[in-house]
Length: 351
Image (cartoon, rainbow, N blue to C red; front, top):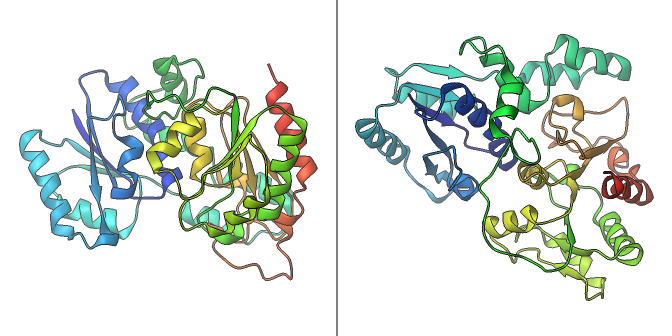
């Protein structure tokens, strides 16, 4: 059986969908073949994944024609006929792709868009907690698709089957290909201060203070990972310590993955870096601001933790893109440096 999985973006969501791939492999066995379609910038995330035979990229930002993507898939279909398309994105682009291959059966994921939208309109925190799972079906993202599809695939073991199949040392549902490069001789932690939208970022001066405290109170090296567009990370340049490395804009996505795979922990916002860390079995500490763990994107690793302030105004939007209507971004600013440091130490000291 040859399955084409489609998820164009974003980085964290692409990583989370490896749980679906691992589950399908455990269910369908070694004979199943998987091809993954995503944005070209995320191809390196999945290239070399042991369960994915081929990754097809589509570079809309650089002007690649839609017909070019269709031809890539059409050529693949001729060589190895596609039996099923699983649309993990449920957008106009993925709908257009299914329409282009209308003769191939397709399944489309339920992204719970309306459920998440209504959660932003409820102001009572107790109601939010009740409705998020009991009524809206907002289970953790790594389990949600498996739960929705397991009846269609006649599987009654779902999540447990995926965990048993992987049998890795960390028992994680998500996974990414491991590199062979040794990054550092000394233990280090990763600070990931970026996020897709500015309201989702913990204030950079808080990250700087946290980094200074970790360097002062522990023997860890500290590495900052961020993209070339994250110029706000220049605030870290005030730190003068031989154990600190500001790599903002200095690493490719693949190199960042290698740093994350070898780190002791990743501390960051609700963003893709933390999902990558967990896919390598690395615990993460995720800071939630305008978004909310109730959406189902909280870290799922056994040692991972998150911090999220319970405010009636959050979540204020489904993506964290909406500017705050208040005079301060309380959901982020109320997360204190000492609280993050204490939680970080709890993770490090846990057996």
